[in-house]
Length: 141
Image 1 (tube, rainbow, N blue to C red):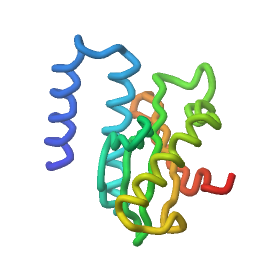
Image 2 (cartoon, helix red, strand yellow):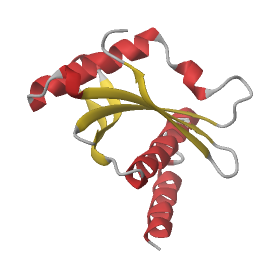
Image 3 (cartoon, rainbow, N blue to C red):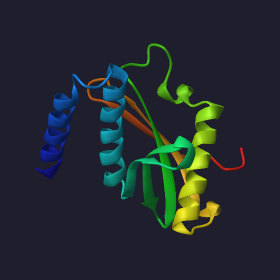
């Protein structure tokens, strides 16, 4: 019952924003909503969404999983005709994630070794296909 209510709330928010956002922004927000629910169902505690640190370093989702802080990048696609969503992760995006994580660690007073980087991909088939890639990259490479 609660999942249905949350899904309806997401749908109403997306409908209200439909004319104000570009298509890719709306798709990205829907993907982040699905990833958020998916991670919560897996036991993650969501700490922040769309967190922006210094120098515009942004994290889609910051969560806690088994005592570690997890920075989650969400990539969404309407389909995978032009390749899977994870192919959109490039070195520039990974560097931005690392920069955001360092800023978070400084503010939270935690060690960088306590941070993990995950990738969640969403392909809007019917039903949407969600894949989770824990430890997708690290600070080192």
